[in-house]
Image (cartoon, rainbow over all chains, first blue to last red; front, side):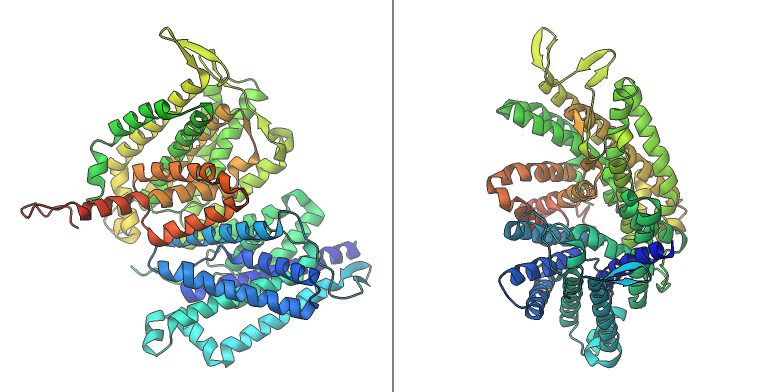
Amino acid sequence: MFAEFLQYLFSGVTIGATYALVALGFTLVYNASHVINFAQGEFLMIGGMSTVSLLAMGVPLPLAIAMAVALAAVLGVALHKLAIAPARKADVITLIIITIGASIFLRGLAQIIWGKEFHAMPSFSATESVNVLGAVMYTQSLWVLAVAGVLVLLLALFFTRTLMGKAILATSMNPGAARLMGIRTQFVLMLAFMLAAVLGAMAGIMVAPVTLTAYDIGIMLGLKGFVAAAIGGMGSGVGAVVGGLLLGIAEAMTAGYISSDYKDAVAFLLILLILFFMPRGLFGARVAERV
Amino acid sequence: MALRLPERVPGLPVLALVLLLVPLFLGNEFHLDIATQIALIAATVVGLNLLVGYGGQVSLGHAAFFGMGAYASAILTGTYGWTSIPALLCGALLVAVLAWTLGRPILRLKGHYLSMATLGMGIIIAIVINNEGWLTGGPDGLAVEPLTVMGAELSIFDHYSLLGLEVSGALLWYGLAALLLLLAVWIAQNLVDSPIGRALRAVHGSEVAARVVGVDTSHYKLLIFVISAVYASVMGSFYAHYTGFITPQVASFEHSIELITMVVLGGMASTYGVILGAVLLMLLPQLLTDFQDYEMMMFGLILMLTMIFMPKGLLPTLSEAVRRLRPRPASAPASGQE
């Protein structure tokens, strides 16, 4: 009974940590540019798929990961430079369609390169799983959690301790004032897209051995990350992490105790409830509409 | 505001003429089939445009209403033996009630939150349709009975004699779809010109300002949400009867995105613009089939480029360009220059 619960909790926390990283990417980009980047999920796919390919070419794992992340970072910058920056003054809905166009483009590209089938990635550790109080814990889950933890910590340090991080925060609070203070806001926006791409790629690589990877995994993972960000409160870093973990656990519990068919509905039911009853999310700031 | 002038005056007769002429230029039944589907989807998008273009409210879940209409018709006529029209009306009523109930809390939200909520609603409905296989046939889809009107069956595979002429069922279906599109446009234009339309434009301009001058904004937003949902439901019903087979794909997130893309691509708040958007977006896959593997990538690329370079949409951008090219007489009254 308890072992079962623990089992669901493990898998929930694992996938939740992935959602948290995607949500952090959403939050970063949203804070810096007020764009909701629907292409965010594609970076998970690109991270996972290119690592699989590089491993198949005989590249050692750490190098493969570094190269895949670098590729995602370049694509993140390109996305900002080529698609978002030229349309800066467009409506919210136009920007949404542009990022959706970008995600379809990336998915189409991936389909040409890697085909439509699922790709498997081996676990990072030789030991696949360990037994914890009667529940099976995959060592890959530990990798996911550890990497997510380290990334969140690094990000927190980046925002509180470095000038660059503070520049991003300043830009998100008031781009005009930030520019007057000598912050190159366009560069900051580009950096936000790059960091979001890196976070997404890392999440995609870490979780690939658990869930497999394919050209179209980005849609659902991206949407769930988006939901996680909204649960936490759009724009809140802590909220993104908490939202991601909550969502992962809620999904795993639903799949375990209620119905695995409706696992995917949990995220969207949660977002409706959150938006109806606490529209700013758990940690979101209350803002008045400027008229 | 000057943009609406050239399109408002002769629009409907011109559209009718175009719809009448199209079959003459279509080489075969396959083209006619695409034209019929385009007309049905265009009518859906005209309804969605009322909400998005005129009301300024984003919906990323509209395909769910389309799908509900389609499945209501399929299930009621197939499993329960109803005739087409009562099934269609029942589906529309169901959708109206649902949109009314969900619209109240959803439309309180704005901007990104609104898009998230409509997205969530749409995906949940799609998941239910996908999972309740005992009712909907699940992912495998569901066969749909042909449309029956007053005892007569309209099937694309039959031939009918109309005023002494032998007419194929496919051509009749095209005619029906064209009529539905004209009706959809006519209703939409009347709504836009009615007090509802004026209130909506005020909401789009500034919701707070509209409220200050006494417009009951939440009432009008809800009303237009329900109307556009019913548009989608009715067209979904016809679409189901026409294609004869539906899968949960009709209600999917991807389909919602396609619908909203047609609105934005063609030009928000421009009824003929969004029809153009529907035509282009539905022809694009046909044109890209030659590229096979590259189809998806090209589609994404075209979508991105159009939105980057024509953020206002195709028709408004084009008519703006035409207006600039046309030399104006110096004594022209400076009206509509706002």
